[in-house]
Every structure is written in C-alpha cells, then in structure tokens.
Length: 326
View 1 (cartoon, rainbow, N blue to C red):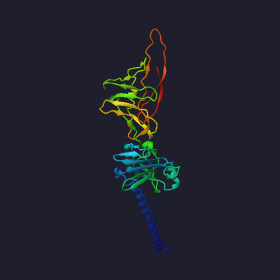
View 2: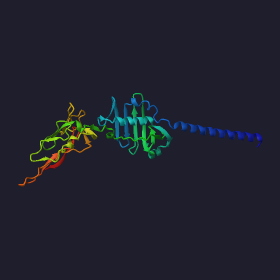
View 3: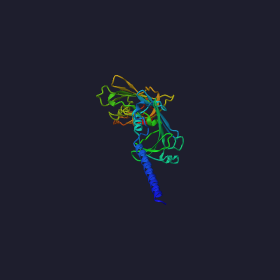
View 4: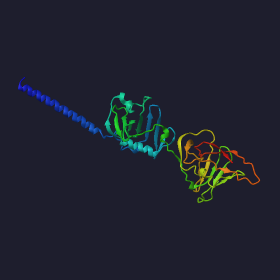
C-alpha cells in the first residue's frame, strides 16, 4: 500500500470520526432543548379560556368539569365545583415542563402508569382540556418522587418525566364544592327543631349578647341539664360541609330552621338545586338534654321515657338518632 493510499484512509477515518462527533452533539443539543420545554405548549397562556376539563380512568371512573360564568360545575352531580382546585389543576398543567425523556416502548407504559385508559387495567388518568380555539390531552401516570411524575401526551409514543407533580382525582365527588352552610352562632336568633319523631321545640334568645338559648317547650316535670344545653343545635350550621350529593328522593325531608339576627331569615329547608347530600358538621347536634328535678323528701319514682333527636339537617340532609330523656 502506497503512502498516498494510507493518506486517503486516514482522511476518510478522520471524516467518519468528525461526522460521528457532530451527530452526537446534535442529539445532545436536541435533548438539551427538550429539557425544560412545556409538555402542553399553549395551555399556559390560555388557562382563562378553558371551558371544559374531563378526567377518566381505565376502570370507567370519570368526572367532567364544565365552566359556567365565573364558576365551574361537576356535570355528573349537577353541583358547583371547587373553583380553587380546578384553577390549580389548570395552572399546574400549563406549567408542566419536561425533566427527562423516558421510554417510547408501549410494553413499558404500564410500569410508569401511562398506558392508554382504554384498557381496564390502566392505572393512569387521562386529562382532556378544551377551549374554543384548541384542546390538549395528557395521561398522568405514577409519581417519581415528591416533585415530579411520569406523563405522556395522548397519542404520542414518548413518555416524559415532568414537573410539577400532578395528583388528579377522576371521581366526581372529589371536585365538589364541599362548603354547604357556614352560619356563625353569633348570627343565630332562633332554631326550630322538627324531629323525625316527637314534638317540635325551639331554642331562642332575645338579644345576640345573650349567651344561652331558651328552649321551649320543656317536657312537664323536667328541666335542662345546663343553661348551655341548646348549644349543639345552635352551632349545627357552623362550618357545615358535604361529602357527596345526589338527586332528591320523593320522600319527606325533615328540616330545622335557623333564624338569624340579621334582617334576612335563614331557612335550611330551601334548596335551589333541590338536592340531598350526606353532610358532616364541625360539631354534632342533638336535642337539648333534660332531666327530672331532684326528688322531693316525700319520695318519687324516677321515670325515663324514650325520646328522639335529630342530627343537624337541612333540606339536603336526612338522618335520625334515638336518645333517652329523663
């Protein structure tokens, strides 16, 4: 082999090495440009134009959030949605950025929780966002720590590790506005209790400065266990929240009416949405407890009879509880 041939071979080898170095640098550059990019381009500047958000899992659980004016509504329940939570979801989706590229192999999707939700075994949640101009869809998979998780844009092969970490709930009840009534006891003037069984009674006070409520009528031969015996029912509508809602039953709804010291009267029997709800209160309510006065020296027989009381109710609540009044 001549010196000229050796020179050509060396030149060709150097050219191949240079091309390989250039190609490798281009791939690293593309990868570096991808890191930090938005997963859903365009959503960040169109959060306020979004009109509908759908969440769906492979097991069939789904929730639809529809914008109505300045608020949102959970379509499956026909009840207002938690506006703050919906907005946080949209802002997090708009800010979702790529931390690292992961697998493109469909066989590995289940390990990261980003397989198509058309499969009943899929563990991820498909989030679909719609605005008048365009739409976005992404599958939220498993977490990869406290700050990031795996996602995959719907119909795209590339899985991504992205931040911030998103935790989404496809159950409709998780998106409800849970605050039902928050009536401070300072505003309550009178409460009318209508138990499922037993006579109606009221707890009232003439002035808001009056700390204790007067209960009437008190069963003959009995007295309140304490001056504050009516406190549970007067505070029943303070921080009253709901767990879930459903359509109203055809049966009767037992009510409690609370009258406020304000000019307007608050009646828990009114419900614009005509719904019933399972509720929870910051305090449990029960009928004021009474007792029979101490026996006279001549002696008397202490008699207890079955009574009834009701937990705090609105037109959206139905429950009852048995108690004994002595």
